[in-house]
Length: 407
Image 1 (cartoon, helix red, strand yellow):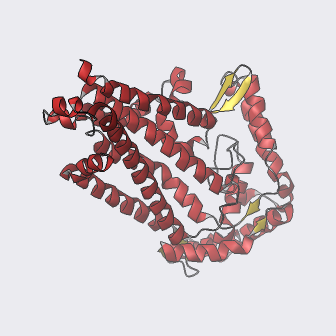
Image 2 (image 1 turned 90 degrees about the vertical axis):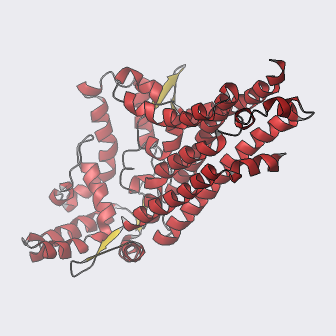
Image 3 (image 1 turned 60 degrees about the horizontal axis):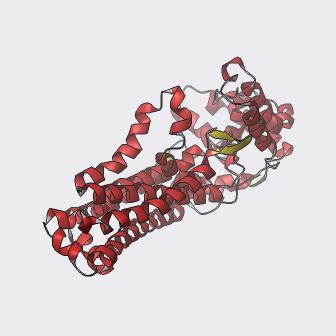
């Protein structure tokens, strides 16, 4: 019966089109992500894609190792040497690009300097240009010091409880230093587009699972199907099983294919580096590596997909309408964005299921909750909460269909 339900879903023309759209989305997202990687040649010209990634890996690996005070001094001196060059000070764009090409090897470390020595809420691309080698010793200390100053500011006075402030400071101080650095553009780019890929999977898979339960009702065959010997038990279990199997296979198949394409094109190195070495990760209080962030992102995406699409199946079973069910993913994903500007709802919005589909972004935010004096970040709460809700929704769907004949 499971195979029968799968054949019904996959045999529909609209569902075949949906799968083709998902494949097209995978190709488009991967192409845009890979094409977005660029490298400036010594002559000032630029290349992009896989060739650029290979060149970036070559020059960035020259700075591979622990970012000690000596390394920071060397970066500041190398950056200053380029700034003093005739090419950098020229008004000619091509010569400026020639100068920039000599900064690409240490560009990630330079970005870390920019973020460390800028105010906590501001970013100055040229901040590293005003540093002297003597500033290198303050690099790691500035991170926690800037956080404390920001948390104690008048603007943030009532935004966090005292326990939450201490939680953030403690996690900042727990980051092991010096951090290890190597080329990790493959993982960074992969994670940048992971949220987008997961959302597309949920939206498109919603078309497939929304018609599983209303199928018999639309064909006026429900009285036959659910009054048959196994219709209300094995039949219903087969429908639920088909939905979960489709969600799981499509999600993991697409994500593994996407991951493989990205890492093959841009390189697999750097997964063991902490996320603070990447652009946008310097201020994160999660002391995890790029690989660990990737695991949290894909696991969160799967739990979120399973919850949202199981909810769609529940609604389709209850209302017998595929149209209502297919709107569920759109409502869950897009309604929170319209409410994001309402400050009193910030805590509530941080626990909605759409957050599971964008764990990669959530990890860079200060989303905290205090329960009984204990501070917990939103990521573990989301994973546990919606895993439990999935366990509730699936039997609930079964019970709804199991009682159909009794109406």
